[in-house]
Length: 403
Image (cartoon, one colour):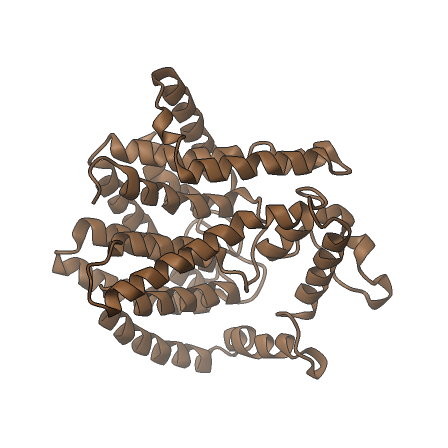
């Protein structure tokens, strides 16, 4: 299982199938081991009790939906993600060297992804032949999905958490972090993924406000990155137009402020209208794609999709006011922990959370941030990124030797 975990960052660069296969194998093996050896402590904790409660609620929401079998496709096997997190905790607790092995593997893969991203930008396709049909849009190294920016921006706080944990006293890694930050900033801009840029900005703000390490380093790299990005924007009108020009045009469509774009606004309106008819339990997981056309003004040629491109709106429409608590409660709890941590720092008391834990929490926090377009909440690729740092955080909190 440890080998599969170390290869997971690489698998994420291939698209959704391989990483989900790895995750499913890890989860299944852990279930077999934990039940055979009666490792009940991994299940009797606040995280898993909270998670499994909402898992069964999602099942219930599917069972009362208008299309049970179709809805269960999203909800029935969702339990594997929560099991995956506690499986990581188990693996880390029982192999003292695994976290270092994972860190080295992740660092090498992350650097390779960055190199491939820049290669794509200058050559037109990845080293392995994958490329985008859109001008100046970058893809994963082994897949044509244009989510490289999401991979980089969502996972870089996680990578830095691991570097802090393993190599914080080695100066050569500080130099590496300095270089990586600039490369990540610029490449995320070049991917043309505006959500990724927003997440990168949000995580940077959180790092500057809350963490102890890398603050000055981050400020210096931001200044350098802005200079480089300004140069890139001045020499590439297409990428400048997508990240700046199109964003401004879509936000102020027909001189009116919109919710990110007219298409996003159309999806949001449909989600809210679906919710109005299914306030408590929602329409059921995976039902937005079925119902969307019935909740938009067809005469206005409004846009529909498989999901409303926002996790909060999706859970609101598909699982109702009860289901949306699944992400509201963790979000509020993280805000509370961050504020407590800030209070400890301001009052010069010893903080209860380490920088390692704070970086992991930032990684989770940006995934819960409500005001951004997102992928389908039940999408397996994005859920792996959601639950991967949770396993490391659980280990840091509950393991016998708490670091």
